[in-house]
Amino acid sequence: MSSKAGRSRIPIPPRRIDDQKYLMNLANLAKDNEFIDENIWKRIKEFNDARRKNIHGLAQGEISYSELEKPCFGLVNLIYDIQNIWLPTKFGKEETKP
Image (cartoon, rainbow, N blue to C red; front, side, top):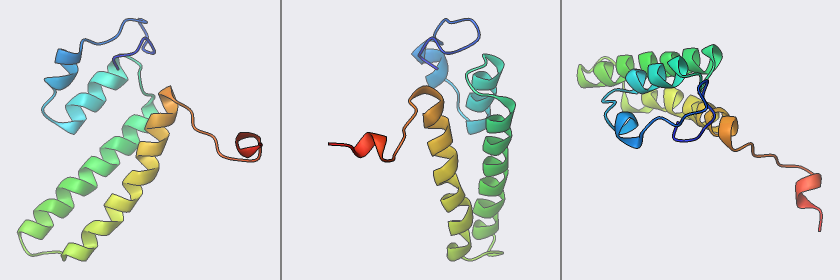
């Protein structure tokens, strides 16, 4: 969000980004300024809801530590998709030619 990729083509000041205390506040800021689309925002929300539910479940003894793996593994794809918004990464024959 410190790039010019948003709707206004004006970067969001780093301080404003850093001031976001919660993941969904940051996701809302990114969505409202069109740095991420609705689909990515929904996936962030789904991850955040699962994260909160599982952390609270673990603290209350309702789930085991190993059950935390599922939301964490799902996060890898989400992070990759978010990174590809600004810095597309491609792997394949074209990228590995000598």
